[in-house]
Image (cartoon, rainbow, N blue to C red):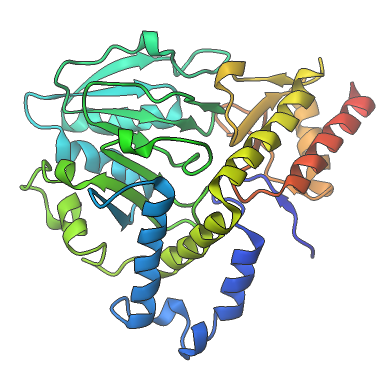
Length: 358
């Protein structure tokens, strides 16, 4: 079977050349006689990959040695809890922006730990959107402020990074390295790898070292960021193969060139949005000024037509277009590695489907 166009929101499409390189080295990595999945995480072969993966991330994010790059387990979901456990002390307040399902999930975990101020809440607004800067109400001397830069389910993206007046933390799981950003504005960013960085199984964290030092020292060892900084993410056995795949993916990003990739991402998304806007048959679900370049969400006139659209698209080699179960509709996730040809195929299918069913 030939490769399909995989519009999955995550785990998501990986660069074909990355998969092919991993395939070639799967049984015998670079003449070592072992797979990366079999190697000691203390061995020289894996150490070189681990070190390169961290260095590549730091370079691509434009961060200096004031920051540490960590590879942790538990995905972004564990970060929802680790962040307040480390940085939200008794008598302190943390600011959170709630603009969708993932922002709400972060809020829920933080409230278990301490006091949370919702700087703005537009989670349930229809059409879906991100908040304007004027809506955000920040706490003076907050322990930290937390934002989610891209809401995967809603199909919305925060285009401008707010000035919060406190250490800023960003969940960038679904749009890291997808558009121009000044990552030095953040005390910490984190992302589950399975959308733009690699396969599932690892979360990438970039954290300013002086901020990490403010963490709660009474926590169990594995839950402290300082532990993972001091041990270079090797305190316990890391998810070696996922980190290896992240290393290969970051090599691919560097080869592509970030500016070229950013431009391509914008153009890919615009092609689909143009098809939506030119039609009365399709309806985008996000406000135009906050439309995501990574997750494009839209509806058809009826749920029956949506089911038919998904079925026929799948038969034509375009998979995973069904919207999240909580909202329905159509969702086309077109992360960094998603090919331009796949976008063109979807746009052509959309036009043909409308002619046949409009």
